Image (cartoon, rainbow, N blue to C red):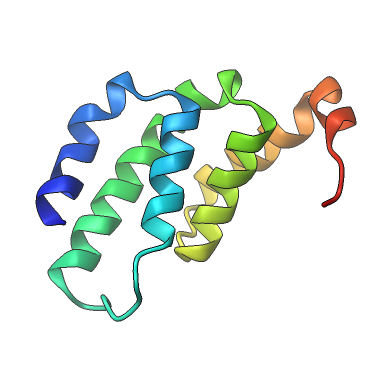
Length: 104
């Protein structure tokens, strides 16, 4: 697991918003009990690297990817104000995208 997490920052330059959403969703599905462990540290570094890449990814993201990213951050309790601001701004800034939203 740790070897995989160490590859995240290096491979992010080739990721699309959909790739990031799938990765974050997979991270959110990890079993609990990692608090204070090396796994938690690796996960935090990967999340921070992803958050730094958000400004490049979000303008090209579809609605599904945006919601997956936001949901994964919430599940992982990753509360980085700038990342959350970018996500919500991107969700709300595009009127066409907003019109396509439907409740499930």
